[in-house]
Image 1: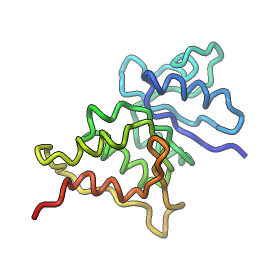
Image 2: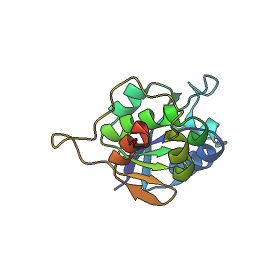
Image 3: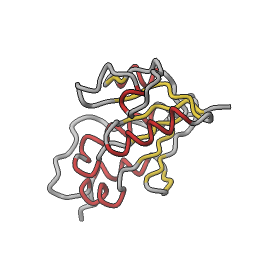
Length: 161
């Protein structure tokens, strides 16, 4: 049985993971997210240097990708430089029920996200899946497995006396 996977990010790390997901028989690539307009609309194989098209075209349509109901998302965007965008994005993916394996360096993202000078998010936090959802999602960053609730602590910042 193969796992349905979305590749999220097609940069330096995403290039290699996308290539692996396409070639590995244990994974079924169902979608690719690309932030860059230049990469959107391109076949997944072309984004990672492979010759044979997959029929999977890169998009930035988050709703469409999550509607594919992937088992997992391989999240390889460079989150250390933009944690205020990455945290809500990860929350949304996890709330869909998809597990996330990420190359984001959790220690640096946590440090940046919990900075007392960072702006606070204006939108409400996404909730993790409830008992009516498909399953409870897991987040793994650099070999660490965490509960999706850990993102909430990043969003809220350090506790204040």
